[in-house]
Image (cartoon, rainbow, N blue to C red):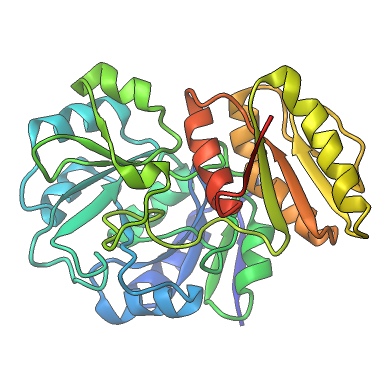
Length: 339
């Protein structure tokens, strides 16, 4: 039995207390953040954290992000907090920024995927912050079956986990729609491990130039220092194809591909910023913020509509567009058509 707590109309203190008891009792709670829904457990309870991996079908060497509600909690998790981390926390926390730092011994290796570093962030969502304050630092990957699109609505979590976890908090649609940006501050130079809800340009205004890990561009890695680096992610059941190139050429190429796949007897869905003729269509919006917010919802919705192929329009790789294109390319298994 899964308890679903409705907080669409705002914070419910009684509901928070119920969910906090689940966390403190070693159970799993799905909850909204400003990025996507998270699947949470007590970050310092090894058995509870193992249940996250079991529920998701997540590889054990794929590290989790620990969510905190106070800056002082970072000092309980990280062996050292460099100057760059303090500057970034001061500017962007609470918010969609995760920092990777050397871990303290109290943090179990199951939480960090066997690494000597811990990924930490402070979410900018009243429900998430209240739950953490009422319980403990919470380890939480996205609340989806491993490899599938991340959830931006409680309905997505219910689809994947109802009857498999103890509690789901329904806080309505998430604001940003893509996961947090992950910066590694455990080595000599700050390195971007995953683009996300905080644009890289904003981070570089605070700490200067940041290196971009090759995995961000699709290079295979043996060790995942952050979620989203090593394994298949964000993929619906349908085959995804991303069309990139000059905007004036993309529209014609998408229309051409729709007809090619239709001629093979396949149902074709298109997700884009302007309308297309297809068996199914999902309008992503006009701005990069709208596209990011609608991205995972579009992948899930087109899957539910029974398409065989999803053709996705690429957008400019700046601001949140960097995170969008990172997710789209991974969802497509790097099946990219250039126009």
